[in-house]
Image (cartoon, rainbow, N blue to C red; front, side, top):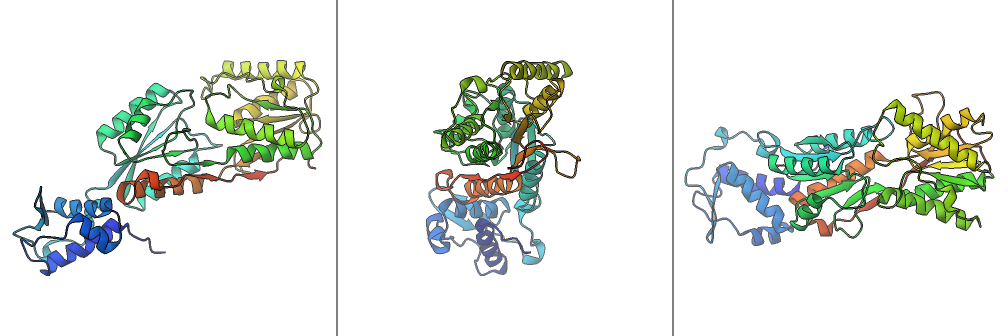
Amino acid sequence: MLIQRPLYEEIYSKLREEILSGKLAPDTLLPSEITLSQQYEVSRITTTHALKMLADEGLVVRLRGKGTFVTSTVPSAEDKPDVMPSLSKHPTLIGYVFPNIRDTYGIVLFSTLEHEVSRRGGLLITKRTYGNPVLEQEAIQQLTILGVKGLIIYPVNGEYYNPEILRLSLEGFPITLVDRFLPRIPIPYFTTDNRHAAYLLTQHLIASGHEKIAFLSHTVAGTVTLEERYAGYQTALREAGLDVNPELCPEIFSDDRLASQDHKYMESCIHLTVEFLKQHRDVTGILAAEYNFSMYAYAASAMLLRKVPDDLSIVTFDGPSTGAMPWHFTHIRQNEKKIGALAIQSLWKQIYGESSSSIDSQMVPGELVLGDSSRRS
């Protein structure tokens, strides 16, 4: 399948061919950026980039206040290889800032981002933040100093916005967010429709006969993904005529150690879940807001001699591929591939075609995958 080249490359190629063939003679004044944008029906940003590519190759000279001229000495077509400089010597550098990659979520997203950037002739540079907002700020600063043309940011959890993201947004620097969005900040984002996804999981538990359903999480406030999931959980309960009991949404885990693989921390999470289930013996269903929490709930139920799913049903987000293990949780499978492809498409438009304000964000539907951890209705 042929990949359509960006518009700036098409304009660059046409002008380049006319210069090398002699159709545009040395010292010829090229049409202005505005005239070219009207001629090709593209934005001025697109024509500006095409002319810059010609200037970088030494085919034109851009004089402030006078215009863009074909250079006095133009090499012959035989002396110039027919290769885009942006695709060879000068690939477009794109930064990807992310908190973590797990086998349950993030691998496909990263792979898609890398593939989409590479097929456009770019180079993806990554920085891991480990969920630390200070490291996230430093990563963004390092990548911009390095000269990336745009950033894909998977923001860390937090009540406050990263000041570097706000600064770059105000300056019009190309940014696209994945997995999460920042309310009231006009940055394009591509994420799962978490509200509807949690609604589907809760609805599944209700349809299976559960009335006492817990929402297992760390602190919800300040983390937009969890806020959306909690809202979907609430909506499903209310539509079914069930009460939303704050005591069944305990927020018992530490939100600053989610990436920790420390066994003592994991054991403490299991202990907290055991204590919660002891206090709420009428709970028969659990919506775990993240995959790790479902593992804690499963371990806690085993310690309490409660069978899953006979005594306790557990549903969650994400999970290993169904072929990776013989048993798996009922979960929402997020469409990481589509999220990644849309994110790069959006970023490329910002860099070479349109302003970020003209690019729509999108919430991608998740898929409910029935597993062994819940009763079937």
